Length: 345
Image (cartoon, rainbow, N blue to C red; front, side):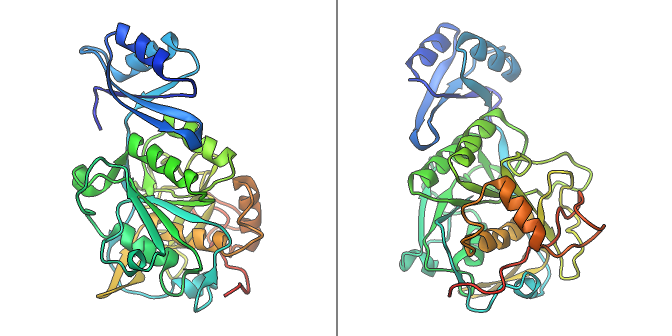
């Protein structure tokens, strides 16, 4: 987001870090405690003439045990096109939806203020962008419908962390600072399962903080990204502690822009998916549209909702509908996710 900005995570009190950084010419911009991630996030302006790699090396050498990194950007992974309604049948999701067994959250942009879920208390949201501007798009509103709308998850509150800055990259990207602050808020509210529709470069800060969340028992379901089949893995989906979700169409063909690789865990409907809205319907495609279907399946099944990422991979693979090459592969992972045969309504 800013080539002169350095982000640092420290588990110790930040005063020593701040003092040593100042003696090296760094200017303090902000401090954000992340108590539920057992860290403090500190933002510095680096000295003129210093590159980000140089700053990372300098700060990590000056203050051992901290993790320093760039303020990378993570983009939403959806696009509008098509018009088909097949998703629920493909994953055997029952009409009327299922009761959630755990608290569900998401890292996205803001849910529209007129969404009925905000009025009846099914959605609790908070912004972490430093901006009071309204959502730049309806992406989070669509995902809220997929997660807790009619025929989706029942008897639960969706905790929505608005981490996408409306003033940045046309309102379709979030920085590391807002993502980690949002994740800490979700953890503080006892969220057990987090849907992530953002994808971007590998980042040590994300690895440390989200890895801590996973270690604390939070399941992370992340879109693999829409960068294309010939592109490297996108994060946080490619972290080993996250469940990486790709998208398929009604015929089981992979979404043409989906990232591929050995990290892909599972597939779900994500091409030309029909999503109801208050004023009609919206049809969207992308790996971020697929991720909520996996989140639904996990949340609605008490035998899945408390498992680790590794255990989830094994169980979801056992239940999945195999597509593509026989067995697990780098395009579809274990295959298309399947819901349990019955659920508590």
